Image 1 (tube, rainbow, N blue to C red):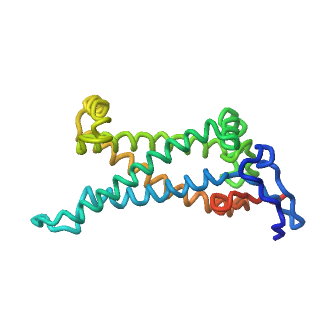
Image 2 (image 1 turned 120 degrees about the vertical axis):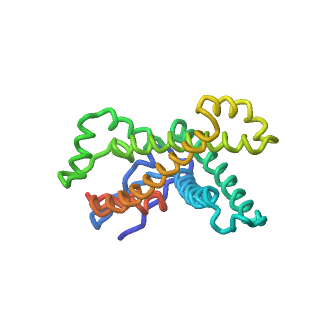
Length: 240
């Protein structure tokens, strides 16, 4: 494949990012994901992986005998959970900011398809191997709604995690959050309910990741797009 294509500058205009470069071998190369989006995507993926693994261990610390006084393993696992919990909080806030305020508006343009009945029909038909998938932005309407929902869940798991954090650590940030955390704890019916919802949101993430990886690979096979590589390189290839 001919790859002699100029890479758009990091601070380039939106139009420059959306311009497709045609190749002699029948493919069009389009820049769709900025470096910031790609970095935050993989940071969030890493954070989710670590949080799920450490979270399961905190719920059932199987590496230490019940009658043991050795809490070092539990302490390090908890420390890792806290660190990556704050990473997830930071990434969630950063991605929300980029969605609304980034000059690269290809994600925001996907909202047009959400409001279009024809776009919904087109995407659902394409998933049934009936026709091609045409999108105004980088996501189809079903993708956009799913990603929006998982972003809301990410916010919810961050909030419940911060409530649990503030109920254990009463100084520093935990102390600053304590007033709000205690109110939210009461509203949710107690700390046990907060913990339970935190676990529910975790399972939503697990189910989403499995489906997300499957659909990313399937989409690349079905529509001949670089759907997986694009979140690494930033480019997508379309056969024209």
